[in-house]
Amino acid sequence: MTLSLDLIMFAALIIVILLGYPVAFSIAGVATSFALLGWSLGVFDIRLMGALAQRFFAVMTNPVLTAIPLFVLMGVVLEKSRVAEDLLETMGRLFGSMRGGLGVSVMLVGALLAASTGIVGATVVAMGMIALPAMLRNGYNPRLAAGMVATAGTLGQIIPPSTLLIILAEVMSSAFQQAQFQQGKFSVETISVGQTFAAALVPGLLLVVLYIIYILGRAWLKPQDAPAMREQSVAPTTAEVFGAIAPPVLLIFAVLGAILGGIASPNEAASVGAVGAILLAGVRQGAPRWLIIAGSVALLVLAFAAGLAPVRLQRSDAGTLEYAVAAVYSGLALLGLAAITSALVATFRRRIIFAAMRQTLIVTSMIFATILMASYFSLVFVGLGGEHRVADILQSLPGGPTGALIFAMAFIFILGFFLDFVEISVILLPLLVPPLILMGHDPIWLAVLIAVNLQTSFLTPPFGFSLFYLRGAAPPEITTGMIYQGVIPFIVLQIIAMALIWSWPPLSTWLPRIVF
Image (tube, rainbow, N blue to C red; front, side, top):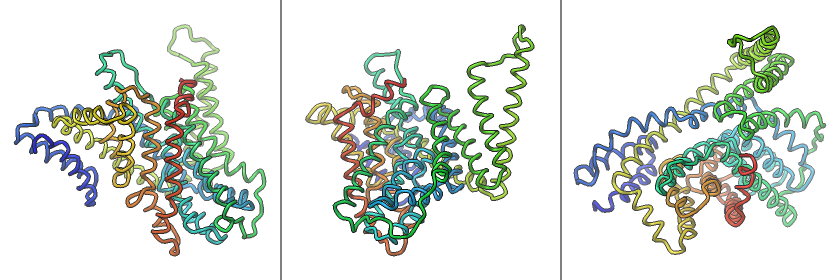
């Protein structure tokens, strides 16, 4: 038994999580139990626990992971400010007159919300309460409608910026460095969040295209499944379309452009996103529009000007011109501060910011508690010899590197039926990825393949999060069985997307090579 204590430990973790206990406590309890058991049997060195404090400190001060709360706040504020409702209503009127048009609008809105909020639950619930009843009223097949809504919500995990990609970037970077150390390289390369975002962008849009092609194809082959909108509606004007789409798109460009362009770190870009979301929410809650627009423009001008022509008044040769430019920069900063203050006051009155901060705290605490306990689990697992066992299993599989990767992807896919993406990312991937990189697989390409695979875990029954979210928001006539049946074609499409990325790696590696 002592020889397989690591495997028993991993199996015990899955069983305890499936029993319904809180994930972080389950991980910590299993790790503690097997550390003591291994110590008593003489197969675990208890002195390894001395490394736990350093591991926890490294997680809490990691500059990549500290961007997570800001991205979560950005998404929650946008969700509370009813951006989804406006987008769905406008897109529905724009595409509703064509067969499958409502489904196309759901996917496009899902993509926009994915890039601006990145919160699966909020997107699924919003579309389940607004778009799903509209599709049912207009004669859509209930299974197809439920599958579209559940799937569109998961785009927030593959289209950047997303929490999954941030966590995955950190895990892949650590694994890449570990693999290089094992190869005897001590001047190591890393993988940044920006590279991961760039790598996932094209595959994320590929998924959207595949979904839309499937919806239009099904509407053409079976018109009764996705008919044109029967309800009378007025087509939106250009101004209405621009007003609904422009704010989230501008925010997306500000955040992703800053990261991909190398202008800002993930933390700084996340701060831009959070401030931008608060400004948008302020406009919707009654803050003076002119002030919000003027303040936003002032902050944008200040960001570019300060980067192109920085002013350093502490220098001894600073003259009148420098002080004049500093005065202009100060005026721009004050105008931006006034806009932010006005937006905060408006959101405080409606108590939006309180709800957003509370939800941000809950989500962030859950993510960090899981990451911390996973670090504890991996320390014990490695101490029991699990790391070497995983490497030996992968290297002994038939088919060499390809066979090992097929096994790893299948294992991740199966675990996605039962575990959350955070648990798989921070517990399993640090063990699986280093041997795969040592076998010659490109780490960025590998990261995207795993990201699409993990996104599928939101749709696979019985524990897919999107299915639970939709079950709570769907009308009574939509049964759980309908939701399960509705997502099957989209799971197949995600597997097809993985096959395309596998067979044509430039889909994920071209953009990061161009940008970085």
